[in-house]
Image 1 (cartoon, rainbow, N blue to C red):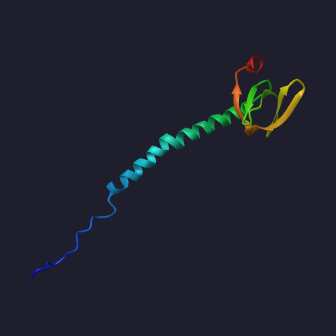
Image 2 (cartoon, rainbow, N blue to C red):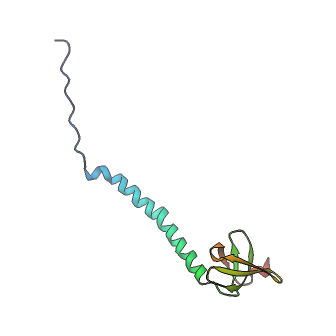
Image 3 (cartoon, rainbow, N blue to C red):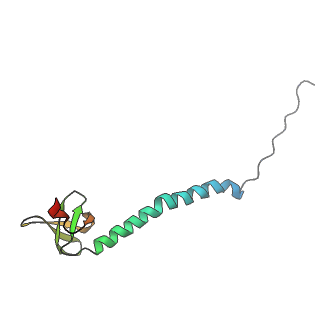
Length: 105
């Protein structure tokens, strides 16, 4: 006989914990390198916005720099020049600047 019989190969056992280990490792890596730092930054941004008060110097997302004159529930008034006050939404504030920053610009 010139042709030998072909037999089916043994199948590997499925549902093994070792097959899920790389996926679990990648999820843990994503959590500590991407998700957790973003959550921490969002929490810091929220506490900074809640702590805004009149007299603080801020920079907005649009690049406007000014001094807070009035704080409301959703909006703040920012003086950007002498007798020039604009109203912006609180979440548009990007950075709380150190006191005296506007004078040094």
